[in-house]
Image (tube, rainbow, N blue to C red):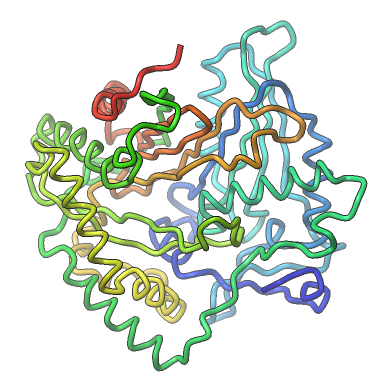
Length: 445
């Protein structure tokens, strides 16, 4: 677990986690072709953020954690993919840009452009910052801080953690941060014996190979070649300040609503009514703690249901919840996490080929994730009040469509992310409307 003292002993290699490798396998960026693998954290603030405050915080962060300035490496011809960092004097601060806009429509275009611009982790830092501010004379427009990273570098919670660390360093510029003891930026490796982990990984592989007897169908099969990244974001207010009944805040209920929207879309497109299959990511960090920052700390559960099951959303939500409960009870979550670590020994091009349903090129029907609550510790950021915050992940060419939730104070956010050619903006708006109606949310003024 690299802390300040360990970094001074030249800990300069950080292996990718298993979930990081899966993300690498889903995007062909390593060969210099294809789409980017970016995720953006979009933070709307009540005023412009001074760029020098962010730059100073990044410099101070690199004093104790080099990974945001690292490069992706793999020893030739075999070896673990890892983040490699040089000495502090040779680390380059992640880039920061500031742009001004004169109309709200320009914000959406600037964000789409930021997502579309690939990060090549072999040649540049895996993180960058964009400040979007209203041009002089423009009124009624918000300011945004956009933190964008190469998705295998960290997950949504890790991005929030990174921003929280930077904000902490900004607020404590005149004193030693963290009382001289930095938080754990990475987690220690699994200390169970290799033989035990190998047995668990083998059981996980058998389960995954039987997860989908019928290959799924996605809208990505018609996107050749895939178009540019598009997204649509809308925010809503739940019926009460607590976000509605507990059941409606669970991922199983929200997934059932997304499934209903997708079943309608599938019917309109005339797609085969084969079972939906999609991965549900589960954060493995300890509850109630910030947890590690670097790496995708995720395991996966695969949800399965028929488009016709969405006719009764309440029953479907109970079925999805039962599937997840059984997966936890049977140890499938832990087994998947252990199995992911063994991907270090498999060529990246072969990682997904062990799953029978991927032979035709399809991976999942669509993506869906609930990225949870915005941390209260980030109610302010670099001296500005946070008005709203949400994540915009890029989806891979298959399935080419994803729906993502999160909550910031009293606002519930929905982001539909897709690749041009998969759906239209009108269809994205319809997906959001179906979900909004099912959740009982009202639009913000």
